[in-house]
Figure 1: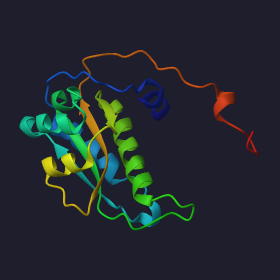
Figure 2: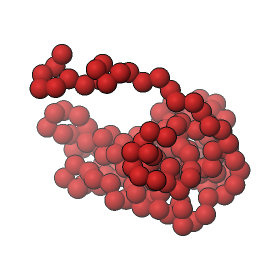
Figure 3: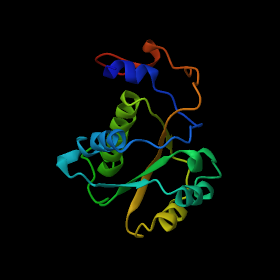
Figure 4: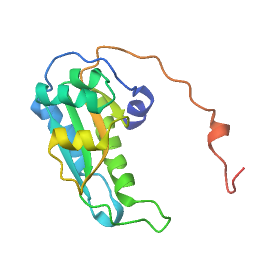
Length: 170
């Protein structure tokens, strides 16, 4: 699958088959994150790969009761190891960097025949407690990963003209 196909076919998957993910596939998805670019190559991340069903189930209440979080064979937490670097434009670099890395994971997952869903609806302190994350670290995002048990239709997207302006804001 080429990258554009992965981008156009990617959907947020909220129903997963219980099948385990082979280690070679999982490792390629994780490697996609490790190789992601980051501001000043700081690589401010640590990714916690949660395969234990008991721990995944414990994440469900921390994720506002989203049951599929516990049903996905893998949940990956993107954790900022450092949060001190701010881009010149004023945006915290760790948020951008981890988002880039997790996007690369979603695209590699598509290549591997796996589905993902970004989870932003979670309680920071509860996730930290479940995963043993120190208080000075920040969970930026969670990502579910597994074989899709659904094929969602494409979601509506804004038109090209609504999204892009050339040379000046319009």
